Amino acid sequence: MGEREADQLLVERVQAGDKQAFGLLVAKYQRRLLRLVSRLVKDQAEAEDVAQEAFIKAYRALANFRGDSAFYTWLYRIGINTAKNWLIANGRRVPTSTDVDSEEAESYGENDLLHDTDTPERLLMSKQVGEVVNQAMAGLPDELRTAITLREIDGLSYEEISAVMECPIGTVRSRIFRAREAIALKLRPLLDTGPDRRW
Amino acid sequence: MKNEFSRMLDGDLDPHATAPVFEAIKGDAELRRTWSDYQTIGSALRHEGNLGCDLTLRVMTALADEPTILAPKLRTERSWQRPLAALAASAAGVAVVSWIAFGANDFASSTRATTVAQLQPSTSNGGIKPAAQRDIQEYLLAHQFNAPTSRPQGGTQNIRMVSASGQGGR
Image (cartoon, rainbow over all chains, first blue to last red; front, side):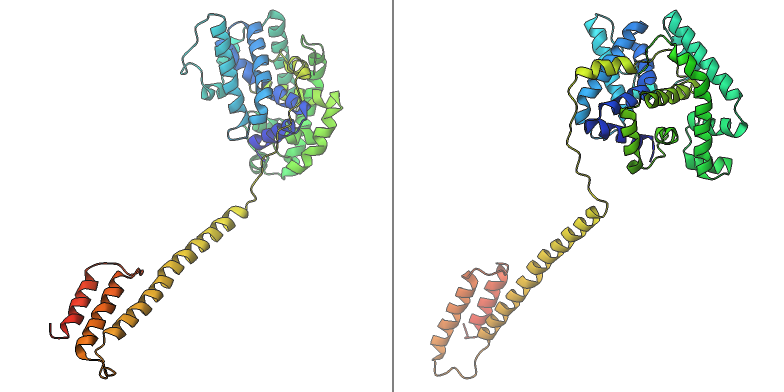
């Protein structure tokens, strides 16, 4: 089961009346959607409002989502349309379709951090989260660090990681889980005191 | 349960094994936080930015008053159904075409045999005068020509009639 199928499972849960499953999708895609919206709506507070509205629109339209495209592709289209409508409603210039498209939305780089127009409090929080994660990564045993890097940064499947690291797939599962837990343990005190109340 | 969470996040958990995980999430805020933490770790490692922002609670609070979605589940076609249906359709098609082609041919050939038999000059005419016999022959040929059959209508009929009529010395 790939990422698309995993998302489809969440979608089907929501379609079956499980509203909490939509929260898992929001938690998963909020940053990517916010980054996309921020390219159109420059003010961060407004971008957050637009991203929230896009998620609500997506929830309302989810009954008609049949999985013909990946969930995130569908969500990004809603995000772009919501942002463009917001710009029109507020008398701003709407970029042409070549300025922002879903393919561009999928790519990201170091420069994206420069577009972060967050409040000083959020910027500090963002920086601290990055530092804690980096420190926690540095403190991990090599095999755990390699496993989670191959998964989260390189996007390899468990089977591929198993082949690269020459270990059973069960070991890959265990290493990735242990790495996540070790980092989360360091991260939680910071996230629990962040500016946003947690879900 | 957190181990299953980690696997589900990576799409490694079997679909049938996800149901208990979803049920556990419903009543456990700690598990929901774990899911968010894992997502934040991934976002931080990929330098996605906006790490200090969490919209989940805002969105879910806004959705609290929204009606719950109850969409009918798609009827998923089983993998073996499609080739079987195609095979059955092909077989039915072949059967219909065969019946039309061979069944019609049999009928046509039997009709043709009858016609040929009728066209044979009889050695014993049963006492019918040759002139009367020619009239009957022409009548039968004209009847054959105008009768609705599956044979193609065209010049062959006329040729045959002329040929048969010519036997009588005309």
